[in-house]
Length: 71
Length: 234
Length: 254
View 1: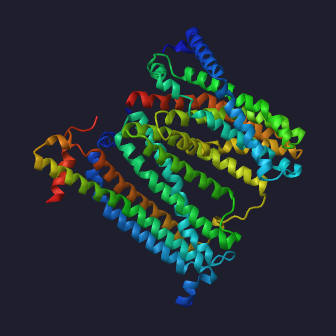
View 2 (view 1 turned 120 degrees about the horizontal axis):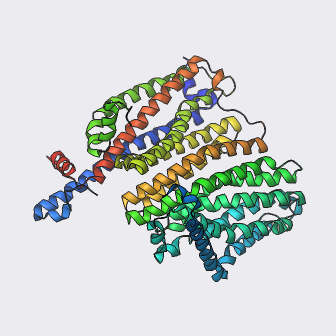
View 3 (view 1 turned 180 degrees about the vertical axis):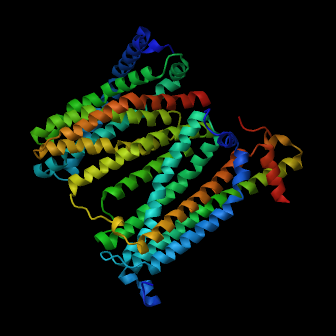
């Protein structure tokens, strides 16, 4: 252990402001890169489900466009 | 392509024809020819007004100012580089023709350099004199511009080819190519600065020459590939 | 191609199928995430609390445990994009384009993080938040390169054209990165002969560099988790018209 007390740990030898800001920023960026793909996925699934439901309700397959894979 | 494609006289004819056509088009519109030059001069005029007219201050920043103005002036003409060809269908013909795209691209870039980079290079010592650039730095500045502006035009050509069909072309083009211009800027400015402080500028000039030969041999392939995208996936 | 083992060749062919990627990598994610959390947890706690302070910089040096992994991933991400670009242009593999599209914002986020932590670290070290140090300048230019690629992809409407355009830009950029780096380093030697070296890595004792190693490995796994998840999402979006994706949407609906 490099520090004697929790207070000293927070103070970081007078550099606490810089150290904790860096780590906080890291937390934000890491949170972003982890949440962003999941958020995008959820948004896509919601949209696509809505589109499929509408298509089913209308009995109209044209709205889902083609089932064939994109060229 | 046959192995003798490089010595095929028809390719050379094609190259000369393309170059002549491009130059004729450029000289047919003198305003387009003069605009980048006028821009270059105007930007340089802003620095004594905006920073300081004092000869000592100007002399210190002259290489950097001249180079940055040259960078921006090069950027100015890029957007229109392939636009007309795309609009009138020439580009499509160029891409779909059996001959390799390399030579017409080199011809187009050479023509563009002859109407932007080359006049900038010739004008630079005059403007350098107005900015109180040390006389011994004039030749390294010119050599640097002569070697560096082809690289700028070529790298800019990649950006122009990638953004040719886009509505938001201008700003995006600047974002794409300006970071790639950095090494040329550093080397070119260093050559002039070394010379103005009485040191030997050969090092950065040789690096610029190496960069220019590397760019001329490789970058046209990237431009050709970028031009193909629009036509083939369109 | 004759000397490549059959198993590898089969893997290569399968990777042509985005569906295969989606279905295979799904189960990996929790394990990778757990390993990343473990490595980063141990590395960070060790680095923050147990590593001794640097004799010159005191406790501010502890920023190294996030700055170095971020700076490393910033560059690795761009190189990964360029590799994907080559694969896309040469083999026309759609999956490579999906990975490339995913890596761009993630790599840009790490580049931003490297810049921000470097700048915060600069305040106690150099007395100012921003200094035109060679390394910081190169990373800033790297950020511009990332923004350029992201801007180009957004500007081109057809995904296929966007992918190939970004591939070309990434390849031109990756050739330029070392040139930019060396020219900026050289520029610094002209303007500031004696710069303060931030990382005194060779002189570091094990108690200081082991947590750094743990964090670099952990952040690598974190990057992998994010890229895999992002690519899986991208697969769904681009293949939304195929039967298996519609079935998947209907299935999760129930």
